[in-house]
Length: 312
Image 1 (tube, helix red, strand yellow):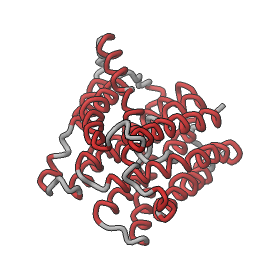
Image 2: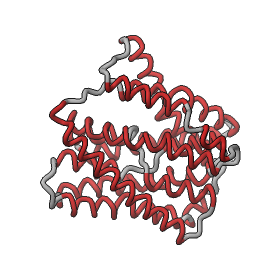
Image 3: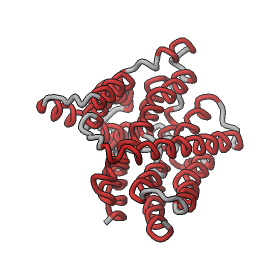
Image 4: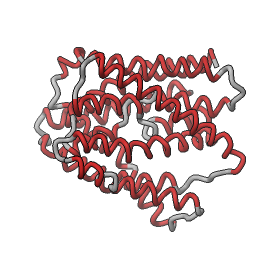
């Protein structure tokens, strides 16, 4: 069942990306709509998705210990992924915004759009709980450190505005959602359903955006992006394999570990490509990272899950 879910989810994302790509290539849409779509995502749908997702969770006292261990392990994984990504960027002599985007793409993954349905299908509601905890930390870094680095290196920003960019709709909504979660505050049902419905548009708007952006990319030269292929191999295969071999030796909850491994192996974070467009960073490289990691994920994620089954 897990393998089918992985393949289905990736294919759905790929189809949405293909529709955006063909819409521009067939002149049904103009590529100039991409910045407007990114603004709708960053300023409306993503903030509502963050609030509607986080505030519906229940922090059971029985799971808090494992949640704390998960966060510690996740932070260690981030350090490894970021360090390896930085090393690859140095080896391939990537510069400026491209180097920044490479490091961020290698560290943060598509842990909500792809991670949630995948882990829920495999591990159930407990697995979803751990997936959410991972996503909270993941997105906390994306909307703070990620935004800062992207804005700092972007064409539309100065160093001062990079600091200012830390206060953005998604950071604010994330903080609000955490406070609501901590104090047990729930949205009224009509707001919850409205926020959730609008927020759910984020996934496919994001993939349409990627598809539209890819029309500006020479797909014939994608095979030359050796840095991205190296990043994909390490992030989605070698690091998960190392995690499996290490975690199997520790007396830890197997569901928690499985969720951690799969989340760490997710394809590149779509939101980073949206942010690249918003702040004038290397949108082309970001879109290529999302495209290559998502397509190769059709093979590597099932392989990762298979390794968990036989080795863990």
